[in-house]
Image 1 (cartoon, rainbow, N blue to C red):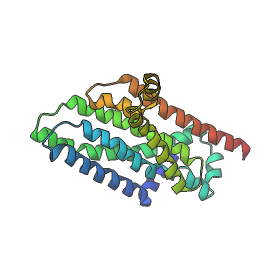
Image 2 (image 1 turned 90 degrees about the vertical axis):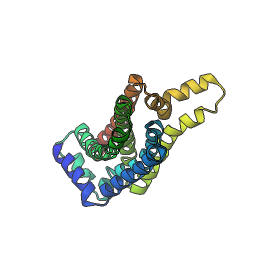
Image 3 (image 1 turned 90 degrees about the horizontal axis):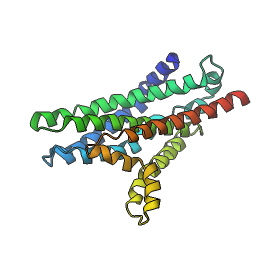
Image 4 (image 1 turned 45 degrees about the horizontal axis):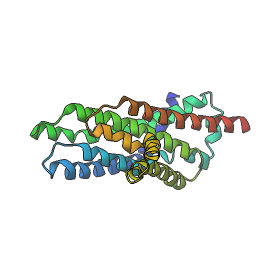
Length: 235
C-alpha cells in the first residue's frame, strides 16, 4: 500500500498535474482572500471560505482525473489488480496520495491568515473550524473524483464528469433558496454541501455536517472498491 502511495505522490510532481493544481489553488485562493478581506479591510472570512468551495470544485477534478483513468489507458491496471495489495489498500493509497497534495495546498493557503492576525483581531476558532471543514469537503470531493476516474480511461472525461457531479452537489444549495415548498427544501438541504457548510461560515461547528462529509467520502470510496473488485474477478 505504501509503495502505491509513494508512486502516486511522486507521479504528481514528475508531471505537471501537481504543479498546476497547486498553482491554481494558491492563485485563486489568494485573489479571493485579497478581495474579501484585505481590500475590504475586513476580518470576516465567511465569504472567502464559501468561495473556496467553488475553487475546489474547479481545481480538484484536475487532481483526481488521472488516478485510475491513466492506469486503464496505459494498460497498467492489471498490475494493480494482480498485486498482493488488497483493493481497499490500493484505493486508500491513491486517495491519501491525492489528499496529501490537496492538504499541502490548504496549508499554503492558510499562510495568508497570518496577515489577519498581524493587522486585526480575527476569531481564530472560526478560522480553524473552517479549515477543518474545507479539508473534509476536499476529501469528499477527492473521493467523488476517484469514483469517476475509475469509470473511464479518458482523463478529460473524468475531469468533466467530476466537475459535473461537484457542480450538482453545490448547485443544490443555490437552487434550494428559490424553491417555495418547505418539504422539498428540507430534503434538498440534507443533500446540499453548500447548505451544510454555511454553519461553519457563520461560526458554528456543525458535527452533523462533518459526519455528512465523512459519509460522502466513505460511500464513494466504497463504491470505487466495489468497481475494482468486480474487475479483479472478471479479469
